Length: 438
Ligand SMILES: *Cc1c(COP(=O)(O)O)cnc(C)c1O
Image (cartoon, rainbow, N blue to C red; front, side, top):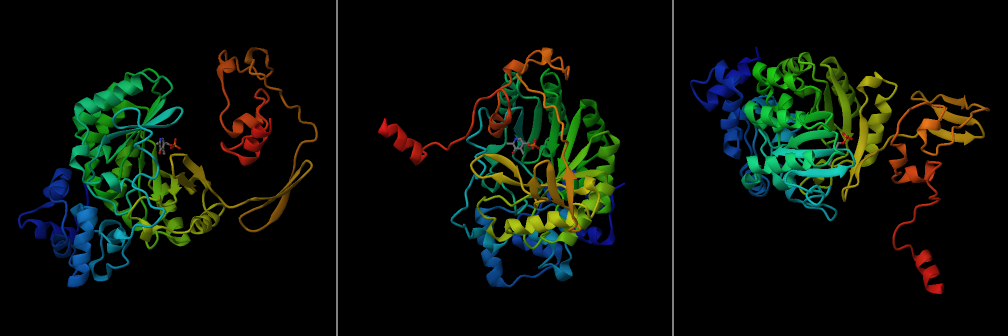
């Protein structure tokens, strides 16, 4: 049973005098009563803004709409809201209208890397499939702010069919990430249909769902939903907790239901100034996640989307956080810190340096405590020369299609069987000069 505490009862009553626990645990009730204007927000959260600030927030909402579930709003500490991490993620800041010189509507080029409706195909073997443009709550730090509240962007069944057809016709796709919007805004029936269609595609080996429902509307994780999801294994689910305060009893119950249904859980946090840019907060967050059977997966550097300038930290803050996690707490609790490359280059991991130097057959390392140590490399390592003929290899992989394997990027420089010696950016002046000299 989901929690319904005295404060939540009060919020529910302010929405409607007769509201009871049955309403509070009904996810559609929360969507119907999602808070979309400043006055209602003030009234429900029990806060008061001065008139000038309110006018600026109203102007912000014109550009970037607001929606907050009563549940998520109920987590705000009304007595001390200004620095409250839930308030900051839910309530518009006039600073969202400060668009910086480097900001872009679509920094990750998700729309340009879209070969079919709703599909972003960036990596060789996996695609993002945007199955819903709706969210129960509009995170103020959303990287897809350009699409938020865009009613025309709700994919029709025909759009979904077209996305499915692309996946069906693209054998390289072995991993499909359902994204959005929030895929759990769809009805159980619609989601069941999509998962069923994907399950029938032979080359699709795994499906992942990306959803913030366990954070912003945990009652969405009903017994019916988990009973349906568990029929579609192998299914993974990634959620989006940013602060330990969000791991309420209701959220932990939702996560337990999903984990009990055999769904491996991951978490993707975004590093946000004024919310979680603190090693202590992050350490508590990742520990609480692991306790709830959620593996911290990624920590994202905040994207260059428009409207996020006030949330961005220097990369050094993320490095400092990673430095304070690795070694200091369970490796299982340490996410990979990534910068999603502007222009669509994908996620690039960044981390502190642990290699200090390298000699012949000896590498010098430091650990999290600052201890400097050496690792002796083998003197007699017999490297297996790879010509991609696995049938003749002593490693006996017995793979018959290795010759079709082509190297990409840095891999070209490392493999034995690719002659590439260097990679040179297009338009290199020195090489242009050479060409003219000839
Ligand atoms: C993040 C992302 C993926 C998945 O990346 P993983 O590193 O496999 O989790 C796939 N496609 C796009 C466009 C992405 O942004």
